[in-house]
Length: 243
Ligand code: GLP
Image (cartoon, rainbow, N blue to C red; front, top):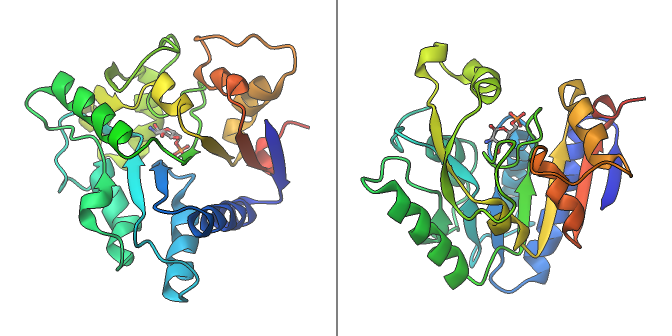
């Protein structure tokens, strides 16, 4: 795993943006894997700036998001659909809407939705570069501790700690969904390249555990699977690195 140390959130966002823009220029019809949460917000802002200054185009770009809450419609301001439209896609004039993919958390048949999502990713030729954040408990996407490394896109029961962490976006804890659809760990690992963004002292323990040289690669700490991937870049700010 390649570790890029940066000063702060701004620099992490800038580096991640440069990285993605370079990839988009290099590849024909790039397939991007995208994440939500607070961590990539700065990256999306930078990408919008690059788009507005004609330094990048999203023509021919296809995107797959990692996850979506079960039971929240696309119009629900707490849904990841809404987040992605609001913080990114609504500001990118040249991406074609049929190339934007997120799991549908209101699908009648959730199991079928998961299978269909896998088919779409495969048809697109797999993700070229996946952006990841990390949960304090080491979750990636919504793959909580204990999720098999062989998992594909699936319905997950969210950990209480994850619901608690994400409750800041909701009016009350009762409003936080208990389930989500998430790309599986194996699905994520099939991405040709991964960039993991880590910012803030709240993530320091998780990052330290990930970087420990003799630490176990275990399903109890989902992010540890990234050690088995041959092209992972971690962009981490000072606050997230234990001294
Ligand atoms: C959320 C998302 C993840 C995200 C993580 C960290 O629950 N499902 O994709 O990476 O938790 O979120 P944040 O960046 O807000 O700390």
